[in-house]
Length: 141
Image (cartoon, rainbow, N blue to C red):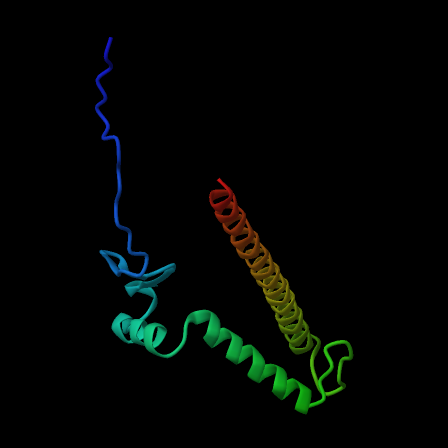
């Protein structure tokens, strides 16, 4: 008895994750959405994200610059200066907390990438040893 299959035996589709998908609500660039409702100039926004810096890179540079300013003003987020209101100081502390959390995530991500690179290197070495062993077996026969 033979079974009829409605699905093809092999199914392939080329996927280009870098292609732009134009949507009615805005434009999507990879994982970043730029919506017309949130920017007066969506084309300019798209050019900035594509040609200058991603949102993450822009925020990273802003955070870095603010940290430099805080350091040069000798503003330690653990000690309230007398000339600053409690509300302003809470904003500085909130910023410092956010910046530290981001740094922690970046450090963890870097460590993860380094670990993955080590595993890939070990895997490549094992693959080479396996191929050499297979070749020796072929020659021995």
